[in-house]
Figure 1: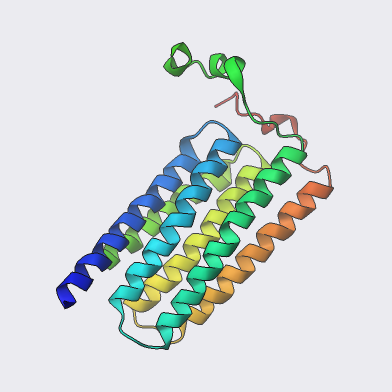
Figure 2: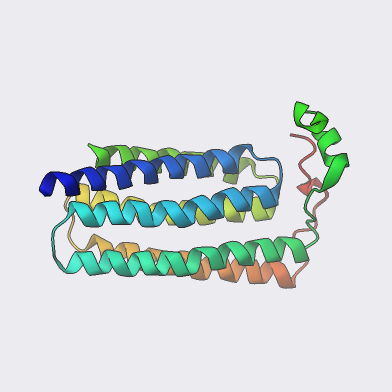
Length: 114
Length: 95
């Protein structure tokens, strides 16, 4: 029973860490601001609860468990809201998303030939 | 073991966010990287505080999550109202 919980905790922690690095690489490598918002927002919203659930499974029953639950609820509520606010501010502030063929030719990579 | 790996992954992500925040193409990119950095700080405080068995580290993490959210919303509302971000170098063609 305890080893099953350890296994589940390790899985949650490792997959959360992998999602963290995925979001960081997406923030660094993707070409457009809105695609970067997409990468960061989606991976953050899944990675933070995975890491916190893994931490909850590591520790026993205590008050800290409910504090982590509060952090998880707060992150789940505020992170998509902040992402939406950033995308809306960028869209209203004269930062149009790259669409269509011209941006693909400007990038000059092989994906424009698909 | 998995806890250490998760802490290392969070630290690597914070370094990537810092790189984006320093060379960021526009102010929005810098704010996005700052928001990512703040969320990763919350996770780092929670994981590292448990690994190092600090006292009442989760209160600090909860407070940091609230401050990060309010700061992001405030800066984005400020950008939304003022025209501060209309710099000509905000395009990513030079990358």
